[in-house]
Length: 406
Image (cartoon, helix red, strand yellow):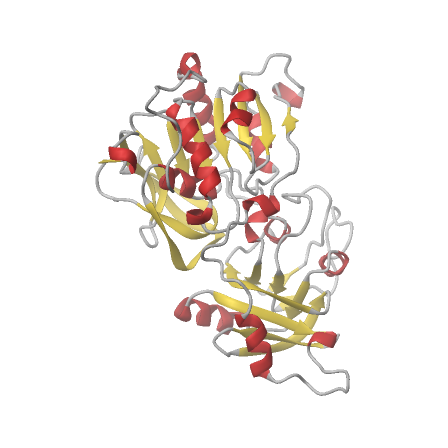
């Protein structure tokens, strides 16, 4: 194993060993507190352009299988672990994690004090970083590159603020996930049809919808409101995804077109942030974000506390304590309330429109690696579509065009 170095934009460095592919990678460095689910984390498109630090000390124990990926590839820009498994031990494993990282060109580093690194990021906030190993770490004549040179490369990387990334991770062409009945058999007549806009969708999301008898048409992030309406949907879904929601002007315009037509809407994670901006609220970057499978969230409708999976670095800036009129266009979308809140830091974790058939959550009810406390939200979406079936797809008033500044 060759040497490697992790360099943060503030100049702090961590020495370690190369893990996965060798070379150079830069991106925003974030930490994930999950004790399980590393394969799902690696293949979550929301981690596009991010270097992920795993706070769990042992990674790779169960290897990699072909059933658990959340998308078609690994999306993380880089990977930081403390103690990689010497061998995988699972009857489901097809290869080692190290093999998969090498095969997909993911540059990583191991033997890092991830506790010290995580404390640094909690105190200073997430920032840009780079991992350097192999030829990227040393000059041809064998000398190590000076740290200030490596820091300069890190600082040249684009920040996450202002990044519009959904189109980079989305599918190029639409596809359909058929509705399923008892035992997983396809239904001849789906209970509902959903247009799901792929902003970085995880494979488990259309699966959770299909299990409830919903036919899911997954559409590219570049889809227009006309593309969405062509599906003749009973409901519209906006997925999770990477980037800064303030930069997603196209997607926000499409979402306003959905809201103008009173089509039932459900958004998850990035979809929640875009819903907030479509309503006229602001969004802001969290100091170090929520990433893991252990965040306590209260559903204010029921008073129930759920343990939930998160992966977000931005949040919606909406009033916590009372319903309010959505600010966009003089209150065009009526009243809104914060439906879910994080009990650790009072971050908005869900929005509910009171005069429209629309709601969203910031966390991941589909969480493939668990927990599954919030799976009921898919049932809530189906109930919403069933209740408003007659009004779905109706023509908007002349005054409501679905256009406007984000």
